[in-house]
Image (cartoon, rainbow, N blue to C red; front, top):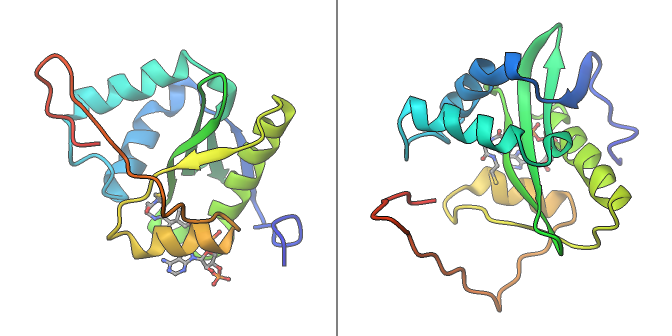
Length: 155
Ligand SMILES: CC(C)(COP(=O)(O)OP(=O)(O)OC[C@H]1O[C@@H](n2cnc3c(N)ncnc32)[C@H](O)[C@@H]1OP(=O)(O)O)[C@@H](O)C(=O)NCCC(=O)NCCS
């Protein structure tokens, strides 16, 4: 079954707005995605991203409540997906798939032909989700990072 057939009743997907910031931060908290930074830094991350490619930062709403997010970025060459999160009470009904499908459509409309993303190795559910969606693990790439300015951001 593909995502167009697997629609979740009541889910509407739209670009994030400033009014969503706290709901987004709360959702990321619940999903365990904010342990590396303070609340203020997470708010700053959301607002900074909203100023860049705001059309690629999507939220999913049910009955006017934000229950899912995904952040797309474009570096001029590849699309990258970050911050896919679905609230605990709304998982396994296709919302993650629908949000991703919408972001893929937006990437395609920009002429982007390849998407990259990172998943923590211990995130069994996340790995299963991306494999289910047809993403392939790239065993030949190692991921290098370096922090600048004395920061300790682990992501
Ligand atoms: C990963 C996540 C976004 C999936 O969202 P979701 O809305 O539940 O995903 P979907 O309902 O679209 O799942 C589609 C398929 O992916 C697979 N899948 C999704 N979550 C899974 C899990 N926890 N374990 C195993 N398979 C899973 C299944 O094959 C599922 O189909 P099925 O429910 O018919 O079996 C959600 O669990 C989440 O927010 N997790 C915490 C944050 C996170 O890890 N984000 C990903 C970072 S890379």
